[in-house]
Image (cartoon, protein in one colour):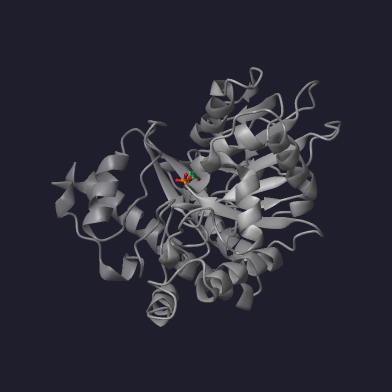
Length: 376
Ligand SMILES: *Cc1c(COP(=O)(O)O)cnc(C)c1O
C-alpha cells in the first residue's frame, strides 16, 4: 500500500544517493575513469603511470589536510577494517585505550582485545548517540577513537589527550576525512577509506602518519613480535614512499579518488568541503527540529555529525515504510545502521551531495508522512 504513494518530481532530490558508504559517485569521476583508459587502467602498478597517480593522491592529501612537516601519507589494501588489525600488530606497543560509542569504535577495540601479544585494552564506553572521551591512563601507549561514529552520527573532538606523554593518537577518520575539519597535528595516525567523502570505491586504506607513529612502527618491527606480512605497517610505509602498495591496488578506485580530490582542492579544499557538509547538515537537523514527528538522534548539538545525520522518527511513523517509498523513487540508503535497531533515518551528507538535495529529501519525507496519515 505504501509503495503506491507517489512523490511529485519537484520534491525529489536530483540525485537520490544518500548512503554512508559507498556514497554518491559524481559524473566528474566517471569522466576521469574514461580518460584513464587506456593510459592507466589495465597497466602495471609498478610503472610510472600508476605510481604517478598514487603520488598525486599522496600529494593532494598532504595539501588537503595541510599536513605538518614530517607527516606521511601511507596506503594499502583492505580498507579501514584492515587498519584495525594492522594497528594492533604494528602500532600498539603494549596497551590501547579505546573510546566506544558505536559499532566502529567497538570493532577496533575487539581487534586489540583479541591480539595475543597485547595487554587487555582499556575501554571507555558511552551510549549510542553520545560520545566517550579519551583520558590519560598509565600504561596506555595508543589512544583510539572514531572522529565520526558512522553507526550513530556522532562526531567526536580530535585533540591530543592531555598528559598522555608519548602515547600515540590513532583516530578512525573513515567517514569524517574529507568532509569536515581536522587539525592533523592532533593525531599520529588518522586512517580512512575512499568510499565516503572521497566518493570512490572501497578496498583501500589511507593513513596520515606522524613521525612519532613511523618511529613506533619501526621499533615494533625491529622487535620479536610476529607480524603477519599483510598487517605490517612498515612494509606499507616502505611501499608508499615509492608510491606503491604491498600488493595490487584497485586502479579505478585510485582514479576516482584523485578526481574527487582535484574537485575538492579546486574549490577551496577542506574549508570548502566542511562548508558544504555544514550546509547540508543545517538543512537536515533544522528540518528535524522543526518537525512534529522527527528529531535529531544526537541530542548534544556539538556532537552532531555534519557528514552522517541520524534522525529518530516518532513511533507512529514507520521508518522502513518511509524508506520503501523513497527507494521506489530512486532515493536510497537512508537506512539506520543495522545493529542500532532504531526507528530512524540516517543520511550521508558527504561533500558530493548537493545541499539542495538534502532539502528536497526532507520535503519528500514530509510528503510521504502526510500521505501515510491521510491513508491510515
Ligand atoms: C565505513 C567505516 C569503516 C569501515 O570501512 P571499510 O573500508 O569498509 O573497512 C570503519 N570506520 C568507520 C568510522 C566507518 O565509517
